[in-house]
Length: 530
Image: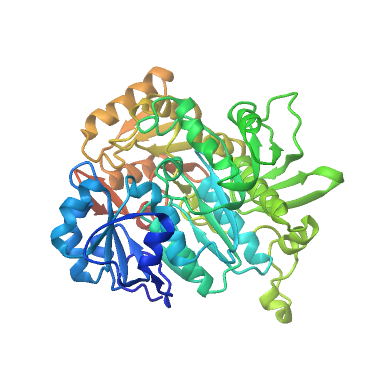
């Protein structure tokens, strides 16, 4: 895919728009050289500028982005959008300076205008919540594919248009990237787009300029309290997605707590889903019933209004994955898809591409979610899952699901990331000790924190919760996983939580290449189990 020099997905054939018209349309002030050019793109990074771009200079913690105006000019930028302070800094670049008090606040609408993404938009799905966002997004895209819909996908793991992908840098891209990506998807005749929406994306205006057709809420639990001082503030950030200027309709998994509160405080029409975790006495339009759980698949029935019903499965472990699938299905129904058509697409007994060969496939949602309780082991030895879970609630969901289906012991390998919400670490250590049979604490992105101190909190919490629990401390992740293999036998389960799909280990600002999935497979091969 051509990306015109940027690491982001961009339209291959951008349509230029009048820069003076942009200034007039938004009522911006102007300084410096005359605004007499056309604009065909927009970016926040001077390193990503291509000819025809509007460069946006934002004030940062250490420097002002306007300081790079000259570099942006040399790369082909036609103007700078910045604040008053940035305007003074950027004047020497010789570029036209477009001025607004809060350029970040204007970013989404400006990007939408430049890329014309509000003109004949695709059906837009947005997914938010603490855990499960990525899984729901992949499940939505998978079902759309099985329905024969050309879909685009943007998640923590990757951005994807058909077979074209790039690795994601943020859970939700900056507004400049999102609208460029949407313009590229329009060129590829994408009819539906699935976007994972973090709390930070909402509060930092990354999804501005978009009105979602349907948004979904998975859950809310302890995380990101380094960014949001209380759970109420964290919830308020999520709630903003369920407002009329953000979305037309919403679907909420009601958990008896935050889900119930969202239903009460949302200002858009909502549909609710009840699961086994739903508090008694709460009525929901849709209800999820788990039919069967195995180490490889979860089968469930989803019952809705007017006696509508769908039974299908996901090739994933746990009732929480079935809940994610239920949310994806109901979001599709709310967008206008018929439940019977969805059921037919998911449970078709033969692969549509191979019908002439009469090859059977397992009915259900045909999905692969990188690093989400992803099985990497073979037919012999321990059963190994790599997971992205790094919150107390994610630990509970995965471990309880595995306990219901595991025949042997459960060994958990995990760490806690540095420079991120330290208040969840004790709970993580305690939960691991309570729900696993053996615990191996290792390093997971210590960043600029002291790795030994992070591990000590986790180890102490685990031992305090269950004094007799088998707890091992192995700093190096590679050695930690191999140590887990020495204490796990045939039929035991190893859950390696944290790294998921990621391909690096971050220490003191350096991203050291490391894929837990690849390393686990290598270690299993070394032991003769793969």
